[in-house]
Image 1 (spheres, each protein chain N blue to C red):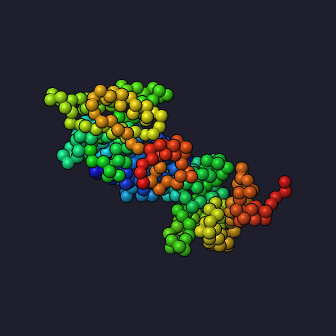
Image 2 (spheres, rainbow over the protein chains, first blue to last red; image 1 turned 90 degrees about the vertical axis):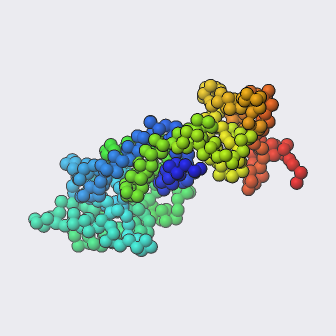
Image 3 (cartoon, rainbow over the protein chains, first blue to last red; image 1 turned 90 degrees about the horizontal axis):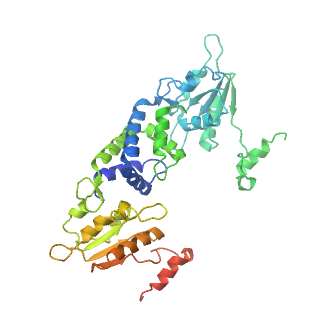
Amino acid sequence: MTVSEIDRLIHLLARLPGLGPRSARRAVLQMLKKRDTLMLPLATALQQTAQAVRACTLCGNLDTTEICAVCRDPKRDQSVLCVVEDVADLWAIERSGAFKGRYHVLGGTLSALDGRGPAQLNIAALLDRLRPGDDGTSAVHEVILALSATVDGQTTGHYIAERLADSGLAVTRLAHGVPVGGELDYLDDGTLTAALKARRPA
Amino acid sequence: MTVSEIDRLIHLLARLPGLGPRSARRAVLQMLKKRDTLMLPLATALQQTAQAVRACTLCGNLDTTEICAVCRDPKRDQSVLCVVEDVADLWAIERSGAFKGRYHVLGGTLSALDGRGPAQLNIAALLDRLRPGDDGTSAVHEVILALSATVDGQTTGHYIAERLADSGLAVTRLAHGVPVGGELDYLDDGTLTAALKARRPA
């Protein structure tokens, strides 16, 4: 393989999550067979998306407008704010259709290992959004911490909860428990313990 | 998710082999975080490759020139021609470094199920290449059928071998046997039978 264009393309594609050098190679060959229906449209879509899409200045969601569609939607409940790590999590919650409030994207979690402190995350902007207005009341009444059930996710949740302790806001987190469709037999001890502790009347 | 640019990009990416809608979504988010180092270079590389790379008019390999680097290389053995299904197979053999002749890419296999006959493949061009010159001799002395050990691959091999039966050329195929590093225990019966039949002095 001495075609530098193809090598370069494989190298770039292999950096995408879920693709290695082998599948990148297969993808390039597939695309070269479908230049006009796949390869060139993909190039254009990449360019257009890179240019048009930006982070919402309010919540951090991705959209083509300065304020994203979720933040602009007057029908969404302004009194509940859902804090997520990443835009992917926001999309996942939107797909569930179970939440009608607004979001705040942190852009990651606190991580001692990776050296990410509060300053690296979108936390100052979150506290700003929650600060009471001149009339002493905040539009938001509840903050839902929809963070991963990992050590870093929980640390981040604790940190934010602490910062909001005196705010008078209700701070909640997602329930731990048995995943819907999950078999008890295959569950880890931590989840089982959490599900037992949080048991509810049947 | 209502951002049409992102939706379109995910839809296109999900058509690549090895990527589904879920991993395409992750890839797009990853790329939006690395616009200048990954997303835009990828768009450019796709465009450039789509424009610059074409099939070698002689063998069907991909290169930026009309005649590919392998066919142009005077050091390669002109007397051996390796017939492969696809450019991916050609690359795989090149990576092994075990072959110093030239190639012919069929562009697929015969397939009764998919309705691919000899006319859909690059077989006429192959027979043309092997036809003796005015002096009655062909530059090629051996044709290696490096085709998949599938029903379609073997059918294609048989078909080509039959067409070349009267040509006086040596027509060979790849050996079947135990893959290097493979454990007997995990081998299928067909491979084990083939390896036993083709046993050689130790």
